[in-house]
Amino acid sequence: MPSPTKKTRSSKKSRSARCKPSAQNKKAAPPTAGEWFEKLLAVQKRLRAPNGCPWDREQTHATLRTYLLEETYEVLDALDSGNDAKFSSSR
Figure (cartoon, rainbow, N blue to C red):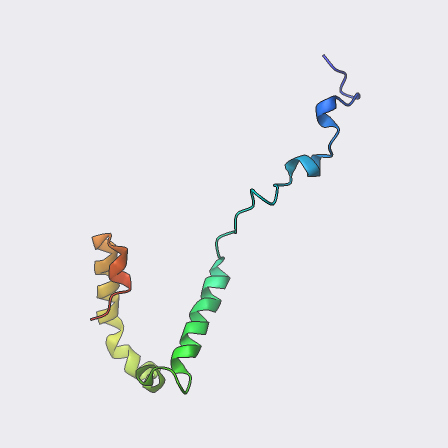
């Protein structure tokens, strides 16, 4: 059994070198909640831009209030169905 103070052949590389993933094994990290929120804001900005969607530009908090319950029920229905496509389908 090797002595704890003696280095064995397998420990010649530093710990950080052994633990660091190679470039081939690196996978992109999933977006964080903040990154998803930034994407959402970018979509909203694009829709409300002068050349964006006229309907979205006209909306205010007051006008959106009337659709809140209806849209909530549609999201709940999509969740219950287990069909992810229902989240992006339009009427």
